[in-house]
Amino acid sequence: MAAKAFASVDEVDEALRDAGYLPSEAISTAVLLATRLGRPLLAEGPAGTGKTSLAKALASATGARIIRLQCHEAIDESRALYEWDYRKQLLTIQSVREGDQTTVEDVYDEDYLLVRPLLDALRSEDDVILLVDEVDRLSIEAEALLLEFMAERQVTVPELGTIRATQICPVILTSNNTRELSEALRRRCIFLHIDYPDVQRERDIVMAEVPDLSAELAEQVTTAAATLRTLSLRKKPSVSEVLDWARSLPVLERDEIDLAAVKQALPLLLKSQSDIEHALAELAKM
Image (cartoon, rainbow, N blue to C red; front, side, top):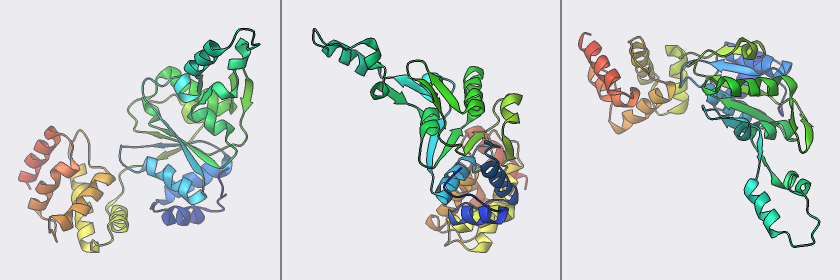
């Protein structure tokens, strides 16, 4: 468990808000169940909807240290669990003077072990939260490694033996749903879909992050962003990009959102020329 055990959905909601994260009821409920039942939380949804921020906010709210495994296609056991410091081992072997009793076993102890995120979380004695970010970018083989880790909560290092978890720390996995995750992994997790927030909730997020903005202007910003998300775009505007737009308004001396303001903001909200051109064509019809 993390440093703080939540008693209710309302308590989770309050703690996350105090940490600067505005959750929906579904988010607070999923966090309560994951932390109380000791189950991994799989947060899935479009990029930029606050999945990673949720893990960071939970760590802040509970006083836990966050351990992050950033996933990519090349992740393997040596990058996720552990590997030996071969350079240090080689230097030790080369420096052994004639007659010393150093053996192969001597260079396979803790001093030569490079601990990676999964093993760090497993052995940690302080309160930690393990964040497995963009788990959908893992290869099938690496996903199987992660699945085994979550199921067994232990790892065997041949030279050191079996290392078992000192605690069951909260695990949050995020996925942008770029590939289908295995049923075995999904079955072991509490599932949470985090979509783009509705206009009201996104307005609250904008006002919390950009307090100098008026409620009316914040609502105009989020309404315009919601309209853009209805278009057929390669990548829809994320919450962070909407916040960038909101922060730019005082710089651009904008006190209302009209068609010209939306067109001016497109490079902040959309990150490909094809999306910008498509949005301009659709806006021209309005």
